[in-house]
Length: 267
Image 1: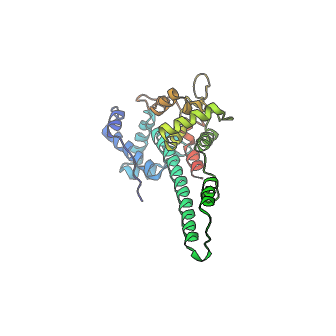
Image 2 (image 1 turned 90 degrees about the horizontal axis):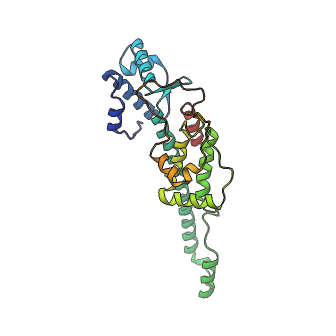
Image 3 (image 1 turned 135 degrees about the vertical axis):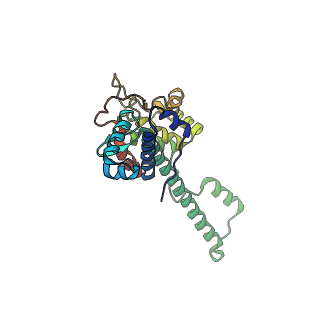
């Protein structure tokens, strides 16, 4: 089944001004294939030339042009796009968050159904004094299927450390009262889902993962401090997609790790 994905026409037009119509068509098809598969595509000249309706020789020229202009990159026998990588990680984080929310709802519905069944069994019902029932309800609230409700702050920290484990972000080793207060505030402002997406965005930033002239690595403050989070959400730490040929990507760059990161998040 085909996948739907969000595409901004203005961004595509502006970002491909330096490409010919033929190059734009090849780039557009590559993006469609990457998003449809939900991961980088095989760097297979025969297959991709067939998809684009050109000769293998022509495809190889188009491929090199798209790599030279930073529109796609090749790594480990695969082709992908930096922005698509970010969207795929964000999508996996969102999917996992929705699955966890659904599981919580399912446990609550099962609990309510069981309670209703118990209440409907009149043969076994016993009456309690009204005052006693009030005390029981106040002091012994029903648990959610016998489990404590997951702490969203702990879930956010876990997501950050999961992404840090696959990239070169600094892991969060301690969560003190100040960090918990800030995490609670950011979750209240943006929601847990978007905060998890920000973790993935940080993990795909070359600057935040040590690929800079100082070897600087970002820590969890980039999702806790309002000013840093605003810059992260607005894309100030994203890798650029230049119109001029970029330097050759180093082995082990963040974008080359997207397959591993997405697979880890699906687990």
